[in-house]
Structures are given as C-alpha cells and as structure tokens.
Length: 261
Length: 261
Image (cartoon, rainbow over all chains, first blue to last red; front, side, top):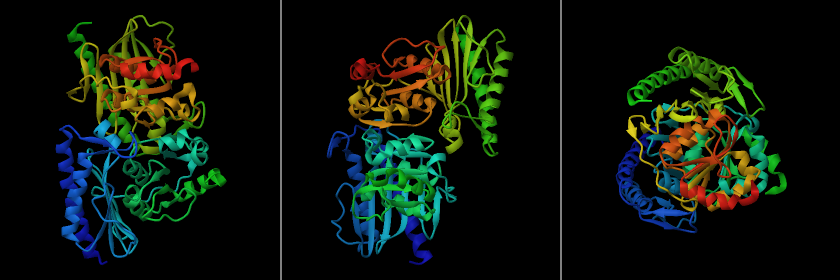
C-alpha cells in the first residue's frame, strides 16, 4: 500500500473515531442497558453494540470488500486473513466503562493479507489517541512516540490481569515480584497505551483478537515483542495468553515461567 | 475554626501546591537522583526531598506554631496531636514518578487537635486537585464532588496493593474475586482519587500516616468509611493496614477476612 493510500485511510479512521467518541460521550449521560456475556465480570452494554454497528457501517461504505472481526458479533465470520481485515473493539474495558465511566478505549486495526498495517487505540474520555503502524510510525495524538527504552523486568513495572495474579497462572506471582511493581488497569487498550509510552515494560493477559489486534500493530511498530505467553507467534484469529513486552523484559520473563505453561 | 479562616488556609495551600507542581514539572526534565530507602521497591528522589523542604518552609512561615509530619523526615518528631499538625507527602507514588513520570500525587493534610480539617491530593501531571474537608465539602478542581453511591463489594471495583494480592494477606484474594474486578494503580493518592470519584468501592493497603492523612479527611467528608483493615479506628500517627471503602463495601469485606487478621 502506498503512503498516499495509508494517509487517506488514517484520516478516515480518525474521523470515525471522533464520531464514535461523540456518540459514546452523549450516551454516557443516559442509563446504560447492561447485560452479562459469559459471566457477571464479562459485560456488554447497548453502547458497545451501537458503537460497533456504527463503526462497521462506516467500514462497509469505505471499503466494501473488507472482512470485519467485531467483538460484539456484528461483523463477519472470518476463517482466513486474505485481503483487508478490520478488527474492531467498540469499547475495550467495558467494566471500567460501566463502573468508572472512564479508562476504556475504542480499538480498530487494519490487517492486509495477515500483516498489520494500521492500529488505533482511543482513550475516549481523556481524548488520547494512539495511532499508526509500521510505515507511518506511532503517534499519541499529534506527537510522534519514540521507541520505549529496552528496560528489563527488574527495573520496570508490569501489568497483569487480576485472575492471572490471583490464581498464579504460569508462575506470574514470581514474575510480578521480580518486577519493580505490579499494576492492573482493567482495559487491554489502556495497558497497551502505558506500554507504548514506556510506563510499563510488560503486559500479560488472556486476550481475544479484538483485544490485541490494534495493540499488536502499534507495539511491534515501536520494537516491542508481541507473542503468546510462552514466546510463540500469535495467531490473529485466535484467543490466547498474550505477552507484550520490551525485548529484554520478554527475555527475563520466559525463564521464570519456564515449564509452567 | 471559622469559615473565613478555613478559606484563607485553603487558598494558601493551593498556592503552595501550584508552586510545587511547577517545581516538579521543571525537575522532571532533568536526571533524577534516585536512592533506595528500605528496599529496591521503596524509592526516594532528590525531587521528593526538595519538594518536602519547599512545602515545609511554606508551612513554617505561614503557621510557625504547627507540628509537621513529613515523609522524608524534614518535619518534626511528633508524639501527640494537640494543636495544628500538618501531614506532608511531597511525592506519593514515587515508583510511578520514577518509572512513569505520571500517576503520582502531592498530599497535604491539616489536623487540629487530632481532627481532620483540610486535605489535598494533587495529581500533578494531570493537574487534578482533590481538596476540602468536613466543613468546606470536597472538590475536584472547581467541581464539588457528590458523595459516592453506597455500592457493595460485589458490584464495585476494588484496589489493593500488589503484595497484599500476591501473598493473599487476610484472605484478600477472595475479597478481590468477590468484587467486580481488581485494580492496582500504585499510588495511595491516585487510589484515593478513584474512591472519591466513586470509580472503585474500596482500597486496602499497608499505609503510613502521610499516605492516608489527606485521603482520610476527604473520604470521611464524603461519607466513606476509613478504618484499619479489621474495621477499627485509625491512629493518625501510626502505620497500619488501612481500608477506605463505601460503608456497604466495608460491611461486605469484613466477614470475608473474618479471623484472618
């Protein structure tokens, strides 16, 4: 894809995101219709669903030959990654959205023939947009982000999902204790944003494709390592325990989890 | 203390905080001089120390007959709480300050004869000041905060310190699992701010007087329960496991920790 085309898509996606932000902020003043998906800790609201429909309708108009993978199921059933594939999470961190009305993100990614091209993580309330890809570079709003320093586990903060810590999955309590400190923010998008800014050196959680689709593109564009928890390549259509980390932190973590995977 | 006097103090402390903010932001561009206090996870920097000296010098000039309890030791040795006692944390969340250059707070509290009068939690980078007390009400910048809804544990998010979760102190893994989700932000001031906004329903951590001095005043002014982890009154001169929670969440948590304290 040439640069002109990339910038055209980039401008367009940013317009969708602004539209979705206005929509979500307006809806936040109303009562939410909240329902449970797989458990009481896995929520969806009318705003998640309506925002996914909104974004998908924009994509269908803009790029009708695309496949779309959407969290709330209004996209397509995707079995192969040929051509343009959009990955959409209309509200990442729905629990934060419901309980905090803050600290959640809209995420959109574009893959072409399986290769990450553009990623977007939009912290809606704080109006912080992380965007870009391997060709455009990575931006926080208008500011080009430098690659995070290659800090190791011991000298950096790590973010994990609550259940991974509580149940000590893969020896991650030891990993957390080896780090400079544990943080939990409750939204893959928010955690990825902290990583891109170099505020944490690793993030590990069980994630679905819409949770990591955009973050993978942005993180790899800044030289971060993105893999399964045991250091293997990620399949962009599968759910898995995902590790995003500096190269050094990944090297530090893998021996600690050792044969626990 | 009459209202005129309260407002005079309030205006003055806010000026100190703005001065300290400018000082810290200017210093953040320079190399920090970082040293360890009790462990590699308990840091202090030249900025913590210099900002404490700055605030203490302001207090000495403004109210020379006060006692001052400062984290970095530039205040007084305090054995009783008669008269005016200021509690100063020049940078709360020093690990965040060092690793993230964000998500830390300046905290100042004024107690008179042991009673909390005014509290200040200042999220420096994001310029969000939580201020007030039992007589003035509690503000986020210029916005008067309503009392958080009295949400129970099951329907709210909880924040704990990393070590409490990892070592399952007092059965807090069970508490976290009973909640809607676990969060860890890494600064008592930041956690307290989330509580004041109603974004979490409980926060429990081992805290020193400067970690909870301001938060206790602000939280109690909004009807939140502040106690030791087993529901007993806090001594403002002692370190302890501290629980700040909605009344309902406190009632939900106490039976779960039961005899584990």
